[in-house]
Image 1 (spheres, rainbow, N blue to C red):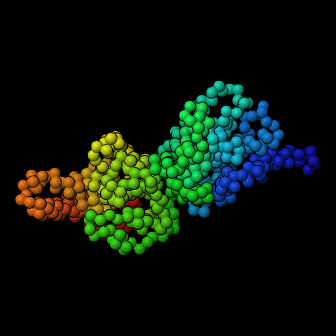
Image 2 (image 1 turned 90 degrees about the vertical axis):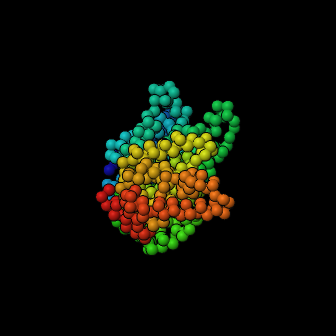
Image 3 (image 1 turned 180 degrees about the horizontal axis):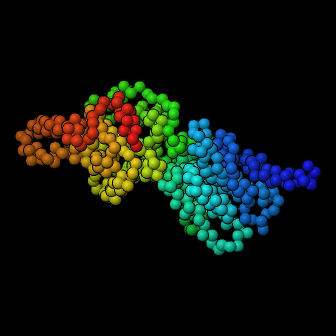
Length: 506
């Protein structure tokens, strides 16, 4: 091969080299000094170094009229976003199943801002993902829209960008996971928020506008770290899972993504005999439902979502005999397990995720019902709690209901998809108790006159205790099963097998 013949080849290699981290040593050094990783480092970790098909690697920002040479090729490499298709979790699943569409914003290039070709690259990959039914992982870090793309002469305000519509339109069509580290503002935040499931590092700040836009709107001067920190978003439901750093975020992304990729052939299970001891013998005592979940599902498989929001409900993903499921559970340690508006919103989100990702739901119930009272109503209870019924009614995936203890009123019904007739299988542990409302309230309401007529406080308490005991006997699990309110009563150690058997035909 002559020098003349080889020149295009070496020209290509040189051009491709401009897109690598090695072409921006100072930017990479600065990134590492702040504890971050580069986009290509995240890509390599996500795919475990496997071969990928990258799209638009040679793109640069639409700024040829402003920049040239290395200032264009290196400083605007790939127009601040890597778009690729390749395998994720290739060691667990066949190549076809492992194929994933990946969109990784590059903060070392123009602060990960969204430019003309940046959007075109994302649009191209969203189209391919929709066409080939590929799940999408999107790393969203970036400063939002970029006003400096001076080469663009075919758009005035840049509002005819299809990216946001196309991304949102994929909801329920293919799984979409958003991952964020660092600053994520404006358009980047809109993409993050519209994902099915959202993972963020502890140092993330996510807001629908950055400092410049906020100040320009006359809303004051703020540091980027003041806008949408994770300490706020972990409580309001913007972020589903919080992790320490990008390495942990990538590892969590793989775990979550695997839930939609298929069943694992290898798994471990705890010895189930210990479950009974996790429930207190006194019905008035609280217990840690998370210990039950971690013990019942495959070892190490339970992933909790939104743990700091709506704490009367525990939600998440898990596996049972290798099969992925969505999980709901009452947490009696918060509000006694009563479902307030925020918990209802959290539970509805879990139903919606299960529907989008085609996952069966396993629901563990121990609730006195919905939270009531003036404060609850002021928080929007009639709307928020009713939306949980809507989410349950539109869920086409099977529900397995496990009644751990209390199952009272509309709240218990909402946790089974809206009615006890909805679950594919509804079983109770022996200590289960059922009723239209909490037993204590039912006695006080139903026997108000008798209690008022008691001769003194001692007699009144004795009558109350007797009536409560009688009502408990009528509402215990075996009675509910005898009236076909539920399908069966089982021992705690048989729960795992009962769920697995119920899921066989699902």
